Structure formats: C-alpha cells, structure tokens
Length: 478
Image (cartoon, rainbow, N blue to C red):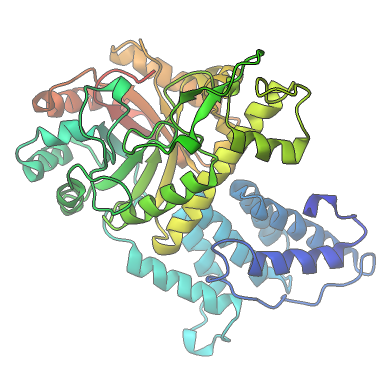
C-alpha cells in the first residue's frame, strides 16, 4: 500500500508509515511502543532539506516494512552519514539499529544502539524516547548473549545427522576433540529425515516438545557440552519435507497437469498452509528452549517446485493475481514464473516472520536458509526446481548456506575452486558476506574418523576460506 501513495503527500505518508511501524509491524510493538516523531513533519516544498530527509526516511521505512532489512539499513545509514545535525537523527539511528538486528548483523546493531545512546546515562533519558528503548535493547543483549553467540568470529561448522550423534558414546569428549580440531559450531538435525532418504526408523524430533513426537532428547546433551567448549549449536529443521511428523492430508500438494485428472497428492506438505505454519512456529519455540544459537532451514530435496500446487496456495495466489485461465485444477497460472516467484517469496516471508518471532525471545538468534549451489550458478533453474532465490533470501536479512551439488569432487583444490566460484558469483548481490556459509563434503560416514577428516579439511586452502565454512558429513544431498 505504501508504494501506491502519491509522492506529493509526504506528510501523510510519514504519519501513516509511523503508525503502521509502531502499532502493526510484528515484533516491534514490544520494542518501540508508539514513539513520537522527532520533529513534526513539514509540508512538502517548504524546506527542501527536510523534504529530502523525509523522502529518504520514507524509503527506508518502506524497505523495513517489506522485511528488506539490508536495503533499509543502507538507506538509514545514508541518512545518518549525510544528516549529522538533523533533529530526526535519533529516529534514524533507532531504525538503523533495528534493521541491523533483524538482518542478524548484531555487531552493527550494537554499534548503532550505542551511537544512539551516546554518553547519556539512563537516569537522564526521557522514558519512551528512542534513547530509552536503545538502552533497554542493550540490556537485553547483555542478558541473552552468552559466550557461544555468533557475533564476531568466522565459523567452522560441522553438520551431522541425529543418527550420527546417537552412535557417539561420549558426546562431551567427542565435542572437545572437535573443538581442538578447529570446529566452532555444530549443525544438528532437530528431526528425523524423510523416509526416502534414510533407513526406516521412528518419526519425531530430538528435543522436548508436546507438539510432535519425540524420538530422543539429544539436544539436552549436545548444547551444554558444546557451550562448555565455546562452540555454538545450530538446529537444522526441514520445512519442505518434514520427516519429523505425520503430515495432515489437508496440507498436501499435487502436481500440475493439463488433464481433467482429480487432485492427487505427490508431495508431503504445502509450506504456505496457515495451519502448518502455526505448528512450525510452536515447534520452533520449543526448540528455542534448548538454548540453541541458531536455526538452519533445510533445503528442499525434490525437484518440481513450479509444477506443484495445493487448493490453499492456489486460492491465495488467485486472490492477488486473479483466477487461472484454465478452469480445471490442472494449471495454477499461465505465468509459471509468477507462480514460482510468488511461492518462493511467500515461503521466505514466512521464514522472516518466524525469525522475528523467535528473536523476541532470543535477540541474538541466527537463522539461515540452505540453498543448492544451483541457486548461485543457475538461478532460473533453482527457482523452478527448488523454489530458491538467493537475492530474496539475502534481502530478507537471512543467512545463506550454499550446499554443494551431488558429485562435487572431494579433492581439496577442486573444492576450493568451487567455493571461490560461488563467492565470486555472490559478490554483486546485496548483503553482508558474514551472512554467507559455504558447504563442502567430507565424504565420511564413520563418526570415529570425523575428527581426522575435519583436521585434514581445515589444513588445506579450503579451510582458509574467508567466509563461514560448513563441513558436511557424507555426500551432498540432491
């Protein structure tokens, strides 16, 4: 709606945007309740300087409302740098800090909050002011960020399935050995994988919750042991193919075709279904109670994203773009690109909202989305096959884990070249490089040999790469 406002109505726009941000925007009400404007907005054309400031702030607010936090932070930083004497400087610094925080760039958020507070002691700050709430945010960070927080250092993460962890007799000792080998973070599957990818076994998750079945609570062992060794723990949860639960048939998806064939379910779940999203949010809240440092949203394994639909997602799509030309349930839209793009944006929008929700409890929580390497090398194919969009993911402020393609060579120099190629392709896209995690495969299945394999990988040029590195136990997942 903001994008349709006339450019000649800046005062009304600013007032309206401020109200929406402070009253409606999820997660912000508790953090910034009804801030007054720094100065009363002036009529357009009265003061050209103030007009320019208003336009810049309005653009930044629009980006923030659209959850495009990196863009919002760029615009707000531009305002701060170019208007050091503005009476709206505190307002801009506050939303700059919030944009950095929502992007997961906590060092920049802390710096912006500190700049807003300056040397002002709490006793002299006006209750309800930007400075007052910035002090509260700094206090919240001090309370919530422990020694394993993902703030400054480059991460070397080891990704293991829950089946791997169950075979380890002494978790504490093994984690200590991994820390000595150079591992700084663990990525642990929080739930059972789809039956098609593993041997048949129990369905459920590996932490305490009443929302879905629990196989065994291994996070209660892993998280304290990892934190004791200064290591972070990220839980991996696949939303596209949730092998950790029995899927409600109403959440199923079907393949699009051009016949009169009745609806036939071909995939496990429609991630856009509101009831499924509500369950995922509840499960994620329980997962957060294990004291994890981050959440990794797993990549879709099956191809055919653009050909799939459900009655729910189709209805949502047609409410925006109108009914399909085809009257049967055989084709969602003659514009397949629009369909795939809308589904991808809607999915990433849900992940961004989930991130906001979880960060209300854990401000320092890192949330990453896994994509195939194809999403970097061949974005069009990745959009239609898997529903992956690198640029949209980074613009949402989410971290990005690039999973190597199946058949990737295991020689360190070849893997190093592949990592450099991915990094170069991503360089022009928006976002902080600290949001990027690059995956390589170790090709190991025996946990007793993993420590040796980790040491070998980190001793090569691959181990010296500047971005976060994810060491995956076993071959790449298709």
